Length: 210
Image 1 (cartoon, rainbow, N blue to C red):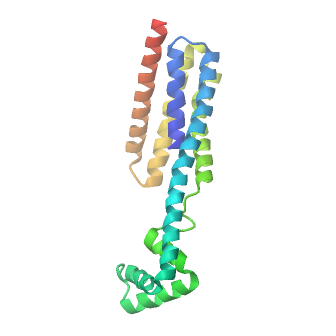
Image 2: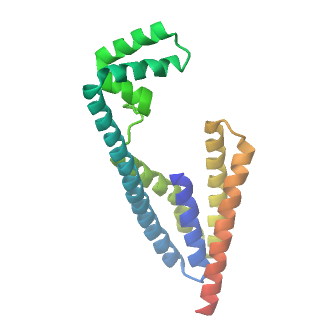
Image 3: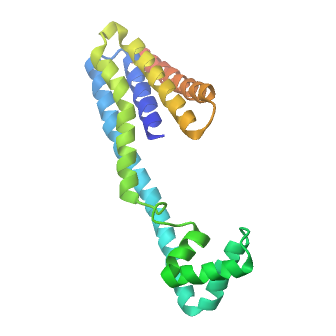
């Protein structure tokens, strides 16, 4: 998602500025500024979002910890019931619940009741860094295209490189998710082209008016 956002955002920005009859330097400056601003925005938004999730998880764990102290019998039966609901016989479920409670009561309840584990717990800083990096990686191809292409080919270079990378990302994403690769490629490239076309149109109109 971050890489897709990066390439579509910066390619659209570059095309919009280029369509307004800007120079290569101006397009490059806009692209780099957009890369930095987009990366920071993604990082900040992800940090706030995941921090809220982490706060919710902490509140749930605090409540569960209190319930384990105040009503251990009920919590033990609740844990056993969760196994029974998944097809385990009552006797086995009771034994498993007792053993898990003896080893790590809070961890067992967090995983079974709340779906929280060390692997799935919210990590705000990590999420922010990953979002910023993936956005920057996605934003790089159109900026490189601006750097390497001659002025008269700038717009087509950005479009072609962007569509190619979007197709690659769409295919990889679909394959990783077990979905149809052609469908994933078509979906991502179509909306990327729409975004670039609209932004280019706005830039052309703005440039003509100014």
